[in-house]
Length: 410
Image (cartoon, rainbow, N blue to C red):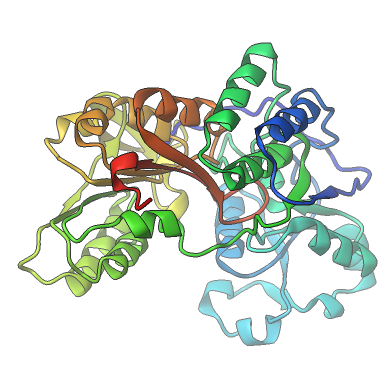
């Protein structure tokens, strides 16, 4: 949860369609190969920029991201002319899509293919093949939804579409240090894939580095390290889905759960979910603050579901707290804070160093994820193994994991 910042790129009117590029690499990159690929990314010219909603918009994809996309555009005052989805007939009766045309790709008229800007709202599949397929069907103007959302950041704080600037010598050196610091080559592959999209909007893939490897925050290395006496801090708990996955991973046995969620509507759903999931005798606490570096108050843009966050576009004032001030002794800390992860880590330094918990932090909401957040963890948490994993496409779903060496099985 971080205040929305202005993008560093100039929005495009998209008078001409430019296709995105995909590159595939054999094997996984070792440290030397990663350095060579980083050099290619550092100063390359990006052919893309945030896209303006200056013509009628259609959303391609009516799943979870499609719903968020419509909500985001509605908040920004942009109407959606059409939803395009292969399951349009089944979805037509969904109350969430009431009042908007729902069509299959093969039902879109030639005029709409020419005149609509189609925003692809799918991140569970690679983007380039979707774009190519739509282009072959005759669609003239295709963009990733997040590139469209990025031009609306002054009205809606969703920040998943940011563009990384060219890396100067200092940033390149810091990014190289992060690439060197990963425990395995799989992390280097995922970090480079993340960087390629953010810097150049190129879709890089590496053999043996699949996206979508399982539930976010519970990769195999984390599951292997889990005990049945965990004190789990779920910061950015939303509706409790991550806590539910935690309970499943530890077979319902734990010491304590502290769920932190400042959005009032989400917190109500969270509290109901926890009552259903956890017996009353077990220690579960829900806090209505936002984690930050220092205690205080801040504006919060609420009512956006899992995109709610600290932002100057918000109208709700919430309390901010440093994790160090909460008197907790966590053994597992998860941070999904829409861009405020680094500030939360700064406010948790003493706790992390004293308690040495498992750490899982999202890093795709702003450019802190390029090197600042990884290096902060690497520099402040000695004798940890650090991993970078992607669980979705378009530069999203990036999570940094820290596992204390004493909790590694080998």
